[in-house]
Structure formats: structure tokens, C-alpha cells
Length: 402
Image (cartoon, rainbow, N blue to C red; front, side, top):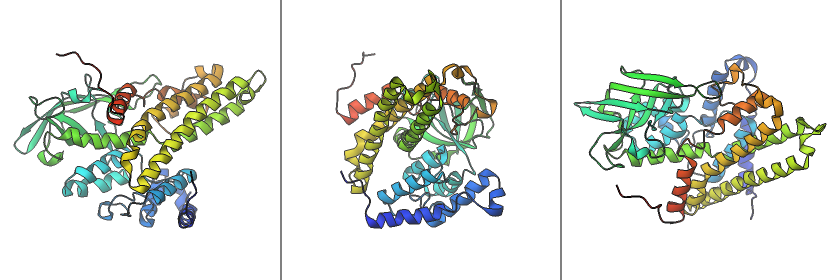
């Protein structure tokens, strides 16, 4: 296996590194608020052709041709530099690619650029109290009255709903249709009368998830993405991008490197924990999972470069399962290394944030949070069923007739 890049691609890497010397910002720009600094540099990345490469320029992207190798080099270098690139937000990371595939021209012009810059933030309205992994059983209704949809029902586990400007969500528009049919994909302004957001307190003490209630909420009829009753097909595209966000191999490697550093600094029996044979064995086992994820990602990368994405579909479906499982292993090991410090509650300033932190209380927070992504975007047991049935052609589980 030749993992070396060609000379022209190494030359491209050097151009990316030269651009990244501009981060962090310097001079007067370094005095700007953090969000303004990131926004300024991100726009420079768009102008240089490094950020939002797959988004056409008329919608705020850099409109670059598809090139899997250049895309990977950019991700590697931006991640290494800690520089702001493509936003991993629900709007930029999930809604935008869905609109580019299924949205009308008016929707693309109205929503894409604002999502890319996060000047308009988004949340996802999928799960309901009785419809989580079995999402197709959702009951939140949208009834067409003249030129408006009227929404009634409830969503749950809605990340970021308390601060979102908009929601992309699934609503049942044909109640009599079969389970996977009769569902439409709608764009909902969160400031409409009849919308109530209630926070769900997490065991860490903070809250990122919410319940959202709809009572006769009215939105324009043109806020539907794709065809009426065909929202299930549109939602599949969004879920693919959500699972790819969750299954990021760079984040797994970073978390593992932080774990190794923790093992070097924690003391066990008077010596650094990393010198303990049991700890070293556990770290070696976890790194095996990390390297497996990285190798799978390289397989997908190679297939994308060759235009053979179908050959990589099975490992792509494994991204999320591998990522969440490995992350849980990392965080459980870190928690065990903390010893009595694992009893410390996260600090107030650490709550309601997903940013990386390697303090003792930060590790406690990450350990508790690591249990959530195994459910988000489709629970692990459901993902394994999908992989078995669609990836390997195994028969479906027996189901009792109703």
C-alpha cells in the first residue's frame, strides 16, 4: 500500500501551509472577538479556495472542482493548525449539502450562504417521544391550508433548539399513507407563534438537548424541500452527513493522543500511569481501534479518488459505529485514570460546550457526553442492522405480524 502523495500534491500541501501561516491572526485583528476572527479567516479560506470547496460561489462557497486528494490535504492541514475551516454545524454540515441536492433555487439562494457563515443557525427536528430509532413512525403533523403549512406535535432531543433561528425537520403530511411515505421535509422559522422550546437537563448539569412543541404553527407552503410526501428520501441525505460529522477520524486520534498524555501525567503506585503494564496494554488495545478507523477512512479516501464510492459504502456505514465505540473506550479509560478526581463535577463554564478540554473535570464531562453520540444520528444497534442488511445482504430480523 503506497500512502505517499504525488509531488504535485505535496506542492499543494505547501501552498495550504503557507496560507495557514496567517492563523492565528496578528496585529489589530488579534484583538477582535474570537467569533469575528474565525469568520474573517474562514472567508479568506473561501476566497483562497480551501473552505466550502464543494459549494458553488453563487451560494457563498469557493466552487472548486471535486478532488478527493486536495480535500483530504486541506482537512489534514487545517486540523493540524487548529484553523477555522468548514463549520461542523448542523446548518453548514447537514442542511447545506441536503439543499444543494434537493432544494429549489430560491431555497439555495435564501439559506445556504447564511448557514455557511452561521449568521442563521439551525437545529434538526427529527426524533419524537415515540419515534427515535424508528423514525418513520413519527406523528408530528403538517396540514396544508391555502399557502401555509400548519404544524402540530412535538419533537425531542433537539440539539441547539434554544438558540436556533431555523429548524429543518420531518413532518407527517399524509396521515393515511404507509409509514415511510407521507412524510415531508420542512424548513421552520423558530420565532413563529406556537413554538415552545423546553430544555432537557443532562446528567452533567448542563443542557444542549430540548423538547420542541408546535401548536398551530404556520409556515409558508414553499418551505418544503423536495416533493410532498417524499421527505424520507431527503432525510436520508441529511443523516449521511450527520453520521460523517460524528465519525471524524481526526477527532478520534486527537482524543487518543490526549488520553496518552493523561496517562503520562497521572500517578499510579508512585509512578506515571503509562509505566503500568495494565495501562499500557489497555492503551495498545484502544490504539488498535483508532488505527482501524484511520485505515477504513483511507480506504474510503482511495475509493473516492478513483470514483469508486460504491466499493466503500460498507466501511462508510461503519464510520459512526466505530467512532462512537472507540470514543467511549477512550473516555472510559481516561475516567478510570482520574481515580478520585472522577468524582468532581464539571465546572459551570465547561457545561453546554463541546469544546475540547483536558482538565480533570473536563474529562468527566467528556466521559458523560461520550454516551450520547452512540444514540444520535441512529442508535448503534440500528446502525448494525443497516450494515448487516444493506451492506452485507443479510436477511432482516424476523418480525411478528400485526
